[in-house]
Length: 201
Image 1 (cartoon, rainbow, N blue to C red):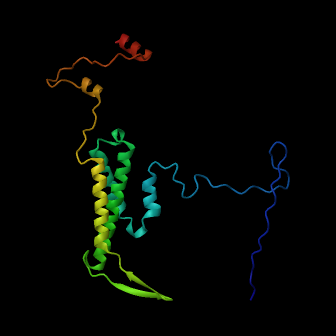
Image 2: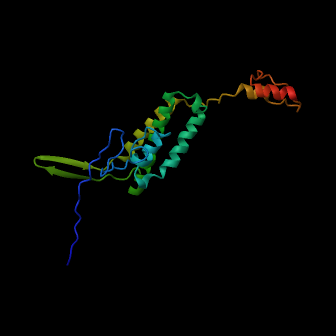
Image 3: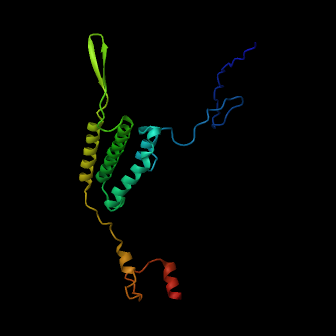
């Protein structure tokens, strides 16, 4: 039986002339990877969503991501949109979203164990002269903590609905109720092309 081995050889050194061109017989530098490095969230528009999808949530639990996205969007809509929200309100929305996701995962785990108030199981492990008690996670207590965090975040954001600011120019340019066209009160444009078009008409 003949076995084949792979022998690794060192790459040739990269040699350039005074103009930066490769010399004859020079090696080539390693091909660089295009785009950002793996795990870099600096250039993403929604880094928290990327973090939840790729790092914080197991693949089996990613079914909660669309639910959490709709949940956060509803809170932002209640506050009048992202353009009128402060950074602190945005962070509170994220905190409420995390608490809601943890609550959903706790309820899912409780359903697999037979209920939120199912009997907890315990065991003991002895290491030398020290005995350690191992208990299952208290799902009822965890559920209460996450729900309290969500309520606290919602109160910090505000439970009342904030009206979305209206565009004043849209109100001034809106036609009257009787159907007749009303003269526009928008300031005249200083664009020369628009001025020539008005003069020609």
